[in-house]
Image (cartoon, rainbow over all chains, first blue to last red; front, top):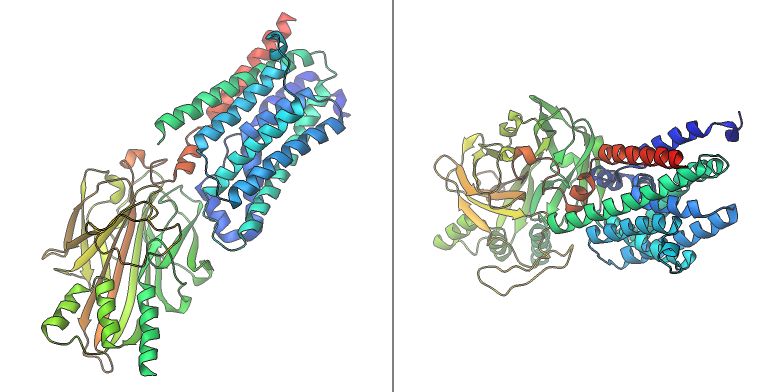
Length: 227
Length: 334
């Protein structure tokens, strides 16, 4: 059966349950144990795992992909996002740039809100022009990278092969991003031809706004009460 | 030549210091992979790894059973020895390592310096009082270390098991059943018997705290140590207590975080070729905000507490309800 022949309903439920794979930032103390014993491969694994379970990073990318149509566009924007987060992930970790993880995650949550707001033509409704999407994706890429760097720096990495470990973690992040994006791109593109796409588009982007606000509030609560 | 040799040995001994069993997280999930680190140096930094053939005993005690750990489960990285193991069922577990004795010869000055540096003050006093400060020493020493950690929610009685080491600390209360503000009793046993009037040095590290935080000793100048740096002075001016007649210590738990106890019991030796014998003991454990708060408590680092604080199923349910509700709303509206 061709994927395009699958009903919109089926896709809807697949899309609904797909987030189970993406939830919870499941990078925990167990990962320190993986890193302690596994060499560079363990950094790739933990990086990929972090991206696959990092719902804030992926929600932002979902928002970006909703806006894009052709494969070239997707490649261009994902490349810009990757360059952005690689700069701060590599540089931030190497030079030991420390930021408060609640605050950086709060800003990442705002990027999720921003994308939903922009996709629903929020700027147009406010009577203003939206900033360049490519520029914003790069800027948010830098911020997401700083969040990833903050996370990586909470692990005890030792002194051996320090830069290679950071690169390995970054490679893992990219691999995780590719694995997560393929089904998301497929689902959004297939749904585009369905009659229910408009409702799906609106529902998903309103959800991004709600999730962005919710995650922002959660991180700020953590910032004020978690220390 | 002899002096140079003595000097080298003294450096080796002075640099080796204590041995500790440490964990990144003392609150573990049942039946999951975990790692215990064996530090040989200071509590903050390991100077070197321990040869496996020096480990006379490596034990895990939990659920009423003592498991002898195979040496193949050890690995080394950055001067730290790691034990990879799988946690068992819920309970308060004990891990222990006992090393074989080694001998070291030291000239009188090096020996005196070492006694002072590592807090073996009773022997130093004896040497002063008996005009023996100029006597060289040949010392036999061995180290016996333990850590207590919590697996799952359920408390068990394994924490009070004496592993039968020549010297060891045995708590009289479960550290995972107390919280800051309470005191804890710990007994020091030497050859299975209470060791009275023995100096014990107690330290603590709050979550995220280390010697990188500004601190001072005996009212001295406040100072810090860079991350990973080994202080060039001893930290014996921490909490120093002596055991009572029953070998018991009783001290206040002032904060959440990791607590460590260390002592060196040294005696004159009658053994041929030796002048002294010492047995070193350490114990580490963590204190949360009480058992009910064991998981996700402050003993995990902030990142992990941060990460694990948000239940994923709530996020999933929330997301499903919102997206589905919105989808049907917009579909109907159209």
